[in-house]
Image (cartoon, rainbow, N blue to C red; front, side, top):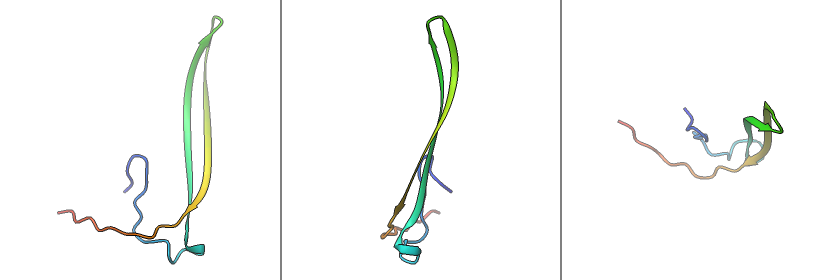
Length: 63
């Protein structure tokens, strides 16, 4: 299960290649515009990649 904008890791990245997890963030925007007597919509998507070292784990006890 993931939060609205995030991710919960179950393990540190110590055993992952290079000690890091690859991460990709993607956003999609639907833009409505108007001007000069015209209107329209544009959908645009942006993506960025990096890697993260996850070195700490915390336990959450849920009844």
